Length: 258
Ligand SMILES: C[S@@+](CC[C@H](N)C(=O)[O-])C[C@H]1O[C@@H](n2cnc3c(N)ncnc32)[C@H](O)[C@@H]1O
Image (cartoon, rainbow, N blue to C red; front, side, top):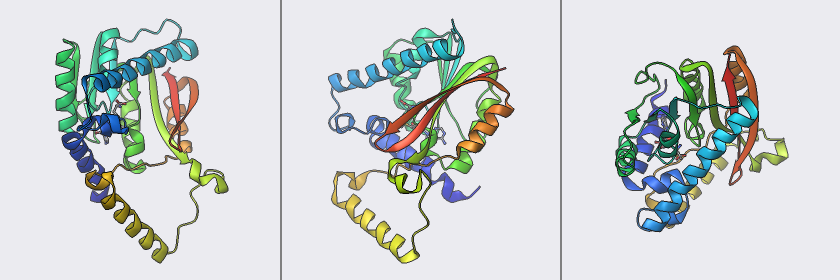
């Protein structure tokens, strides 16, 4: 692995230290300096709605009556989704690469008096995980991981899916901005133009409120690789929904291990 690929882990630790809620949902009301009881409540309500929607989709499209006992939330952040999962399942494991995000998640789980949650710092090996899960879930996480790392992690996650278990994972594959090339990234720009673009971006960042923000990468995945791994699992059912976060185009994949 190239060490520059691990750069994103360091940036996520900075997000966890500086601005954990904004790092999860990039809306100004969730900035540390703007956070209120009210906006924090709204933040966690969005997680509750998401988890309800995920379970409804699992039951409607993949496995009627699905009731997961062991849930894994990969890239759990401050526990926005871990908390509602823990209210509905027997046990939830949340993993994240940022210790500061996990610290905040621990506080949030304690505030909800949850005793069925384990929060673990994960690396690419996923060595922190033991056993299998009935539901493996990940939302707005893979997009931030360079694809060659993300694909290897995805493959390791699949090894922890219980027979008959469901994996619900969201990832990005393209951008609205690529419409002229039908979703494919345009040809590489000549080096000089790329350098000018990078310089302008740096100037823009240092001039605006984003000045002190860590980097947040957005990475498109090759869906051929993803579908290949799902079919090889083997998966017996696959349901796909589109996602679009500010022009970052993605898919939310639901599939069940045979
Ligand atoms: C946008 S937040 C989403 C958090 C949570 N999934 C949610 O929707 O509330 C992305 C999270 O992924 C975590 N993350 C980024 N790279 C990761 C990696 N390689 N392994 C595990 N977690 C990672 C970040 O630290 C951050 O907490």
